Amino acid sequence: MKNQNFDKLQWIEYVITESFGKESKNDTLLAVPEIQELLSFFKIGIDELVVLSLLIDGGIRQEEQAIDAFLEHFGGNLSGLKYITNALHSLISKGYVISNTKNRHSKSLVKQTFQAEEKVYDALLSDKPERLEFEPARNFNSLLKNIQNIIDRRNDGCFDAETMLKLVERDIVNTKPCKELDWINGFDGLSITEMTLFFCAALQYQKDEQTIDLEHIIKLTEDNFSKQKSLRDSIANKSSMLIQHDLLVRDEDAFLFDEFVGLTDKAKDALFEKDKITSKKSAFSTATIINPDDIALEELFYNEVEWKQIKTIEKVLSKEKHELVVKNLIDNNLGKGISILFNGFSGTGKTATARRIAKITNRPLFSVNTEKIVDKWMGNSEKNVRKIFEEYYQFSSQCELMPILFFNEDSVFSKRVEVAHSTDRTHNSMQNILLEQIEQFSGISIVTSNHAEKLDKAFERRFLYRVEFQKPNAETQLKLLQNSFPDISTATINSVLESYSFTGGQIFNIKKKFIMQSILEESEQIEDFFVSLFKEEMQQTQHKKIGYN
Image (cartoon, rainbow, N blue to C red):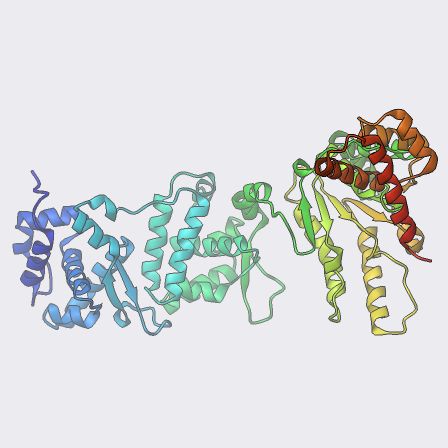
């Protein structure tokens, strides 16, 4: 029966004393029951225990140990170097020892110093060997994170290539079952070196980088020159299992003396398809994402002609009809893009209608931040225009339904001009890029405008639907007011409509004032108050100069 109460540090000191001046395993040590218990506690062999004991002692004394210190302890004979480095490799791979080097380009253990990991002291002092246990990765992303940590330590010169491969293999073997790793393990003949190279490419892709520098990764995974050449040649002549199984592809566009490889589409889909579906960015550099769940469904009122057009658009963009429409458009070589223009007076409900359509059709709005598009630096504005569409398509690939590309003003859409200044040239370049992108557009877009007559004629014919938002007629205004002010009598509302005419936006503002003032003043004469607010709005409107003279 094991004695769990014996002083382990005392027996570690005993190991150091008894191993002094001896190069190999000590039969005397192995015969001691307490030493056997130490071996069982750490789950290591006698050579590893001796090396670990020296590191524990050095750590307590605040000293790091180098190879020369081990050699001196064992008598100074170079013949002991092999089993010392083997023991260090094993301890590092178990996570018991960490190594450091002042020269980050040196990968050999001979050039490094060593110390026991904190968990070793923790386990000894608490007498809990479970604190030494390696914690396996919970899933594929967790495995990639562990491998990235190993690669970072390798790049920092903490250990050689052989140790790195052992650490990676330990992580792979111990990772909890997951479909991505099962998929990788299903390919026959992959060496641990090839698997490490593949994981490096996966990590790079996870960072939105398509390729990795093959030469750097080869030197990372192999210290031996002939093995480096063999791995390099196997990629070049396509004999590598990574190429044979269609897991990696060479970048044919690289410079003559550069070599880059990346994941194939097959590998990307198998490893990251789930992430593409579930991981959505809430905002991009050119736009803000408005999800349909975040849109409140307002009750909007339209004139009859507008209402018919809007209902048609809602039906076309419904999931079932849109799929059928797109199929038929493609079959007839007409292109599947649907672009819509909402034009009309300010406050007539153009933006609210775009949000309503997004809500009803369950499509996110990719709302363009137009103020960020025009840049003072030469060429940046044109790049930003292209980036709008690049990011829209990127976001579309993440969505279950095609999102709506939403320009909530027409400031980036206008007529091309005669070139008199550099700004004119930039303006025309932006319009040409917009025309090109709209011509090739394969998504859904809505543009709102207060002055569609100022748009370039080439834009107009690219809008499949054009809805003209007029000021609401008397009938629509009556519905708007009755819905917004249910406590006001029809007679008072009709009296207001005989004297004034307002847009939906103005009525919305009056409603907000009515609610706030009612709370502040608690007036009992709400109908008189209602009429006064409309008079005030009319006076403010008459004093404002809106639009162009």
